[in-house]
Image 1 (cartoon, rainbow, N blue to C red):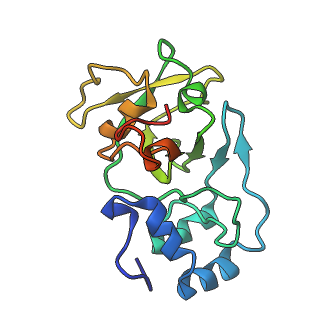
Image 2 (image 1 turned 135 degrees about the vertical axis):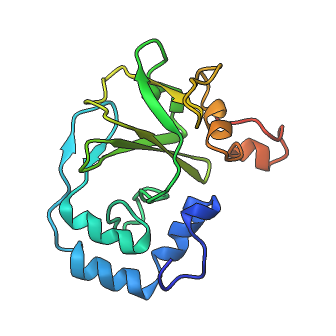
Length: 191
């Protein structure tokens, strides 16, 4: 990460990487030059916020981002959209529970429509964030669910009926809840 300390989303901790990057002078200066005074990004309809990538967002790649994220926005997401070589691939599946409901009230889903037409979904919960890539995705349906495929192209044998399943597919530990931190059962999820 330019000007950072080597922490990046590629190390598996997108939230920590953003905590560091949002204080790096090089990123702050680039934000001020490139995005601070730009109009709000366009969005498209969906069951959660889906931001449309703009041409100006391509300059954020210098910091391994797919789009600029305001470093001063304390109420913003816990992690921006990171550029990643390998993201779990997913597809819209009408037979699956709606994604917005599967995340629940303790998590958040946000989308980024890429210039190439793809859609990146970011799921945040319990201080962790993971991203999924939907290639050639049309508009995300209001009641749409998703299924995730293995890297070798097969659909996962168990669908994402619980968001807890998602973290294992993404190669991340299940986020701990406040109950877990107070001595509850380890490994349980807020979903």
